[in-house]
Image 1 (cartoon, helix red, strand yellow):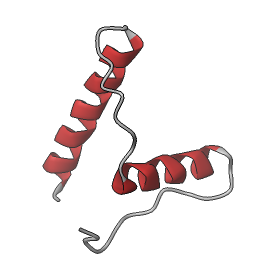
Image 2 (tube, rainbow, N blue to C red):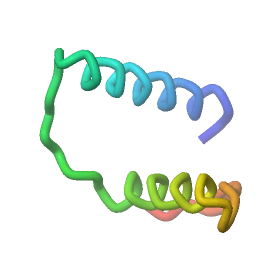
Image 3 (cartoon, rainbow, N blue to C red):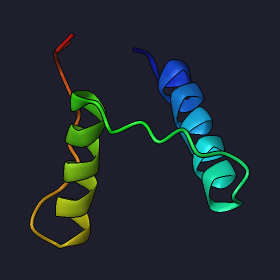
Image 4 (cartoon, rainbow, N blue to C red):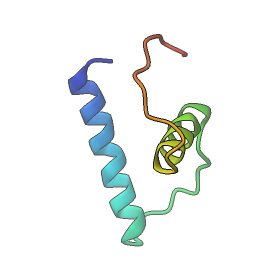
Length: 60
């Protein structure tokens, strides 16, 4: 994906998070493998035990 595509996906996820926190939307879907990888990377970075790095290959 290019930069513009990543930003659009991020914007979509931010809006979903806003809707969830406002109580307006609850999909109940579990994180898929790709999303869990992102969650784990952010949690690791926030704990100070790593950094978010660029993906250089497609894992799909």
